[in-house]
Each structure stands twice: as structure tokens, then as C-alpha cells.
Length: 252
Image (cartoon, rainbow, N blue to C red; front, side):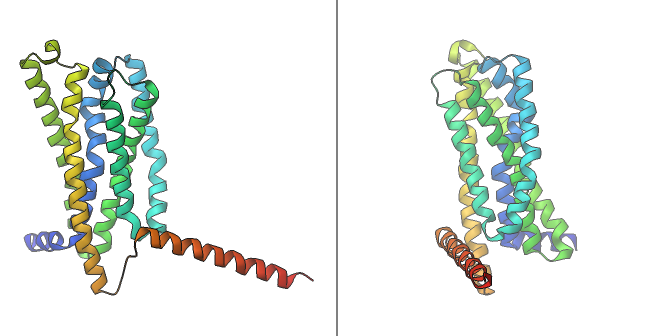
């Protein structure tokens, strides 16, 4: 029975969409906070431990503050959950690119922006659980949630291993003067994250297409984002006009 439930939960495209959302936006923050962030900031970026501790504190505070905001967004815009995940993914990739492509050490303000972008990914990955809840019956939500929860941690563990492996290979080959945690070595090793971000993005887009076809078969259509924004703007204008008309009619 457990195997049947697991198979049915996996067969549901909404479960897989949640999995790939969790996979894509959670792993980079975990890699940074759990393993490679500290040596990268201290050895490669030259920060003192006190400053690094402050940045790690910023990571935690940001996660706490943005969590309720994502909850509000999902409640108000349930049809745009995957768009938010893709936006977080883009912000993560952009932040890492800005830091790793610099010819020298990054300024503190840029490292702080990187920390904020990575911290947002943790609460953002919870959107994946909402997909599991939406597209599975109540008796299968626990199984679907378990499937989703695997994504980010598998990606994080694979990335942590690959970063370490690349650093070891570069160190053994004498790259960057044989310095294990040199800035040049970290630039190459941490770039492996872009591969996971790319793969996750492609899988999100592919699975989202299946989810939307399933929704369309049930009579639920998701309009393009620009069309939806234009419709929302039009409704706000109409509501404003109606309120003004009521105010004028009630004025003696």
C-alpha cells in the first residue's frame, strides 16, 4: 500500500513540480550556510570571523522576515507560485554571478546582497510543499510532501560534494599556487551551482507545462503573466471609479 501511494504521489505532476521547486531554490543557501560559506568568506574573501558571523546572522534574520511574506503571496496569488520560484532562482544566479565574476574580492555590500538572496531561497522553497498540498488528496499529502522535501537536500549534498571534489582536484594540480581555499579555486568550484540552477529551472518549466495542461482539462486556465497583471490593473481602476462614483452620488 505504501508503494502504491508513493507511486501515485510521484505520478501527480504537481508533486514533481513541488519537488523541482524545492530542489532549485533551497540548495544554494544550504551549501553556503552548512558547508562552504564560511571558508569562502574567510579564506577567499578575506573577511574576519566577526564579520562572517554578522553575515550569517543576516542570513537567519532574512529567512525569518521573508517567510510570512511568501505565505501572504501564495495565499493571494496561487496561480503565480512557480513564477515566484523562478524569480528567486534568477536572483540566486545573478547574485552568485556578480560575486564570482569579479576579478578581485567582492565588497562587503555585495556579499551582504548575496547572503540575502541565498536566505530568501529557504522560505521560498516552502512553495514546493504548497504544490504538494494543492494537487494531492488529503490522504496522500504526507507522502507527496516527503517527496518534495527530498529535492533541496539532495541537490545541496551533491553540490557540497562536487565543490569539495573540485577544490581538491585544483589543489592537487597546483592551480592557484596550490592554495586549497584560494579565490580563483572557489570561483571555479562554486560555479557548479549554476548547473543545478539550470537543470532545476528546465525541470520546473517542463513540469509546470504538464500541471497547466492538467488544470486546463479541469477547466482552470492560467493566463500569461503580463495579461494577468493588465487584468488586475484594469480591475483596480474600475473599483476606484466605482468608489468615486458612490462618493459623488452620496454627496449632497
